[in-house]
Length: 376
Ligand code: SF4
Ligand code: SF4
Image (cartoon, rainbow, N blue to C red; front, side, top):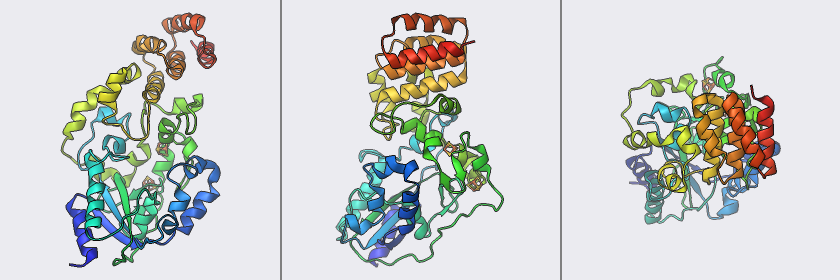
């Protein structure tokens, strides 16, 4: 069996749904697009993934010859509804930044070890433009919502590629195109923030998903504008709206899929009130094992839970928000104040006034004053 056939067979054997191979050439169209939108993507361009360098793989790995690209279908089991309203499916599926001891981290590790056993040198931490790589290999095409779609699956997929130093047999039927129904723009219309400002163009600063996890100190800063908070609804991590409305995903979304026993077991841990006032131990033992990817500190989940509770507008959560106003983190107290202002009512007002008289942090005082100014 050829090296190429062995690699493809192994990839399918360990659970990838599709695999393709292309030469490790550069991706000038990606570099141009990203550079043209530097203002929107500077956080990413300057970040550790070094996407502009990675888009020219040989600049990071001079001996690079081939890229093996894979599709993992993470929607083979069902997602509990009580999680999917607030947590994106890809995060529930434990795909992003999966540590090697988790199944989705073990799979790339197995692939890497197999390639090494075949005599390949495998590139390390080369953050390739995964969607473009997979489209060039013909295993995905695009939706106007910017997601990659795999035939017979949809967009609930996770792409991983491996750069190696061996020449292989290449797939030469690229599918670098949008394959949506001609007049469909359901994703653009459904987006609560108009983040998809034209087909295949996303403004990450307007995207709810990015606002749930990029807004951390050391990244885009932890402040979320009130106008964006209101549009975030009850999303705590990620947003799937533009994929949920997509006709290309309906077959999978409506299919009767087996339960994911792990998610069924942990779903109860993710009530908004519980996340808002969670202890460090609860965060480490219950939240981190599911959501270990982009959000790095407990306080950001708490902030997002506070926003979600404010948007729910249910006065039953006023006591939870009052408790959060005693949290040691300024961020949590400030967003709890915003949420109390959103819910409104006499009790919320009394709590805000009492907290204002004792609050010493300027940023939190400002949030309390703003909340009191709008309270009904
Ligand atoms: S993920 Fe949500 S906010 Fe972002 S583009 Fe899609 S629908 Fe809009
Ligand atoms: S909603 Fe319509 S336009 Fe958007 S990605 Fe799906 S098929 Fe394409």
